[in-house]
Length: 222
Image: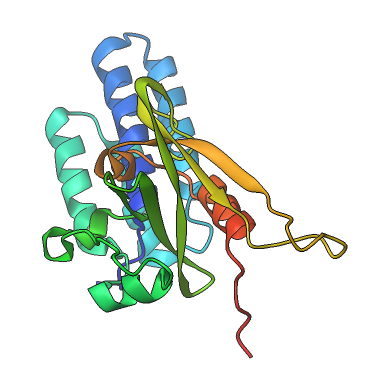
């Protein structure tokens, strides 16, 4: 068996594409339309893994052969051993990411299944602060921001679901070369209140990575 190579957001994308194909198999009578859906689903999955080789491509490509509900279930189960976990973190690691927050409340890490994590996110209701932790360019980075409840549903900027969100705003650490000493810029986006649900639906990390880069000063390895 090859080493794990499927990240959580990629697994979510596969599930989404599998659901599209399963729906077509169940509801579309024209075989030409079903075959068209098979082709587009296969292409979308393979495109999400530009570095896949040999056995990995073969495993992923099986999605285009699925027909019955049992086939789809077995296929998704067969992918689970190949899921790459989000690197396990400790309380001390999280506290080092947010050194100015002396009373940082961290999530209960022992209960987390890291296979299904794209980012770690949690909110301290007492301080109205939200925290986001992500692996970027081989580094564990943290973003701390203000969480403003909206008490309504809107579109999350990470998973694109319409669900209950809060406005997550953080101050960027990067400044223009000619900026004054008191310069600051805040970046805000609507983020799912429930980070577990967000992690179950996120299919693309490009927006997440852009957001983190805009906020955090990434140290360059020498």
